[in-house]
Image 1 (cartoon, each protein chain N blue to C red):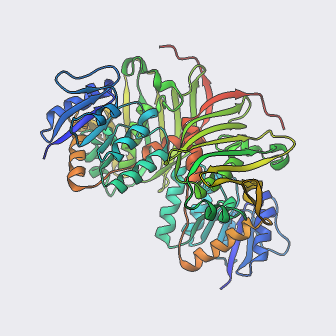
Image 2: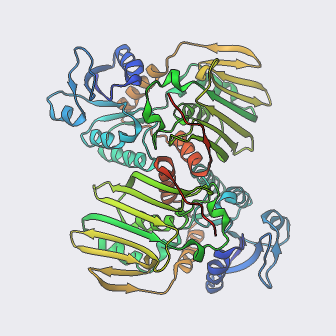
Image 3: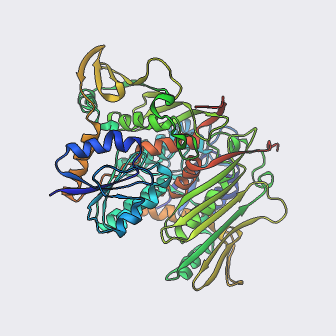
Length: 306
Length: 306
């Protein structure tokens, strides 16, 4: 069975990741693109999902790659039309709307997938295996990148609901929520540029249910070397996930390294969910972000000018 | 069976509401008070829960009335000691910690109750009955009170995690989440005094799953007449819940009115949950607040000086 999939929102993430992953996976066929601005050569193009649904193009599933602020209405429309839905991260602008999509997908009998691409990074599964049975003593997360390099022109990131530095930081949290025992926020500081609504820098202090401190430092203005690292100190040595989860180090020795296969991993999982008639709706990384906005102390940072 | 209950945190809400409700309900007996400052005459008094647990006072349950910022650690300690736990609202400083308490209570086989006292206001149940089968066209929530009158000296309200005007506003949301179909936030404006971390005023625009707009206006600086009203326009007339849910009006006619029986209602529900071996963990009002902090646009308001 071929899954005829439509991409809604043809921005950077769709072009860089979704199109190649769909191209590469024989179970998927790109049926259409809905995007206000751009299209893909040789593929039916529509302005938006409504126009696509009103056309005679047949399709089974939608990959939703628009900014989170407008994701719910489109996702709900797709679910109500009986389409399987893959939600780019974060799965919504609010937690409550994801609850609604979950209920709607269940009622309609379609597959809903919240995607956390970093969980499919090469070294995440080996890290889970290595940590099994060990006691975690402390965790340090350093997620520091240059927004000007990685998100050029993406002004929605700075608007209310755009998440700011939590847009990359949520990737760290998506890995942490699958490799660590449950943890929760005790204290947070959010640095918000005086001309923005979303933080450019954040320090988060969590604790695991087993009592281990988890410190996360997110920075969106890192120049020079970039870090996407999680360092876990255990009773059996130190584990380090670096490069966003694509390299695994044990006591300073590189043990796993691999090419970027995150999005192929996501599409593989999506195809399996559709075949099994299941859904995977996990909001825990976004819930941690909401907790940080709810509990965090805000301090004013200098204006951000791209 | 008598439920021997300890109050942890003997502040205003404990004195005004919990003590009288426990006194009034024959199923409960006040076994101890844990509070840094005050005690209750004739009742064993301890500085904190640890001291109480280390004593020879026997008890079955805890009513947790401390500010939300320190609620989780105490609740977890009580659950781990095999005690049933009633959580004052909001149930935690973060959503993730309530998930943890839920899992812990389930594992330990004790009752956990998230309390939303306004749901037990006199007119809420009749409102649910009246609304049944009607189509909601629009909803207006006005929750406007004078913080200086109702929360004198409660500086924690203004700190990070203290919720500000959402401390009363969450009561409106706790009623709305049981009388309305599911709804979710589309837009919010939070007015934060320049010397505070939490909003003093908020406008929230929600929409129900059935498409009806829900507008909520929260104000913490209302002088003169106070409003705790929810007005619901339907195809069968207009319903108004006023006075925090204690009066019901249909098309301008008062149909239900009653004395404040919210806390007795909560304790009745707690006793029933304990007898049935169940739990009631509903985070939806707090999730809406977290959504507002996540999605809301912040504007600076004048300094708040009590």
